Amino acid sequence: MTVSWSDYRRARRRSRQAWGLLAAFAVSAVAALFWFFTAGQFAAAGPAAAGPTEAPVFDAAWMKPVAEPHPVPGGAAVSALDGLAVKGRVPNTGYSREAFGQAWLDVDRNGCDTRNDILRRDLAGVIFADGSTCKVSGGHFQEPYTGHAIEFRRGADTSSAVQIDHVVALGDAWQKGAQGLTPKERQSLANDPLNLIAADGQANQKKGAGDAATWLPKNTAVRCHYVARQISVKAAYGLWVTAAEKDAMKKVLASCPGQPTITAG
Image: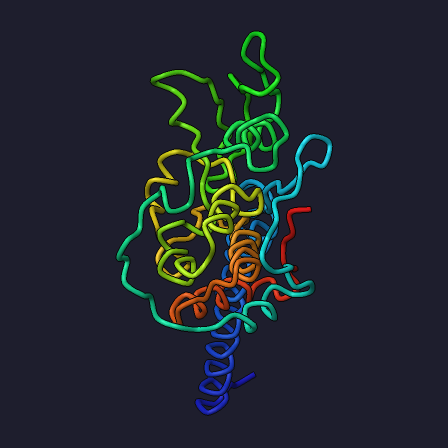
């Protein structure tokens, strides 16, 4: 059988097309596998492996509610965010820790100071100091901001490894409405379980007085809860947000539009 030159060219062209399609399919298959193992399968598993998605708030068995000037609105945190005023920061003039009362008072009058209340609430395997039912000397927990397992041991060189973070930093609160609160309300803000989380000391130091526009937990699994908690605190105490802060909060909540506000009681 004789094959013409035109038939040969057509066959060769079809062969090149077939190999091209096969190569494209192979590239697509490799890309799909890459997505599956980097973004698909493990994206779903990632947050759970990264640590907790929320942090404790209140234990009615031994804690008492702290009076808040306003009720935290129910429903979605993003809706509560839209209810907050948007303003710029006012000058930091007159700010001091003492403006929020003595550190770690027993504001709920349950017989224990606030720092030990929060350690008891947030740690597992709590150990009390000899002869005390308040003073926490040890424990462990899955720290929310880093997602790491951390051991707490009270001591001059070890206590600072676990610090109590003000979710809405007091310096931030001072520049966004807290100057207009009464001394008692500021004292409540500084000791309200809603506004307090036991945290990795280094992470807490890095946060400083930052808001959501300048600092978010490294552990992305807890960011929705963290931002919702900031919104809830600001609603409860009549504080405002800056435009940049609101934008940062909305960006976080876009990944969890159903995230509810948080209450302390």
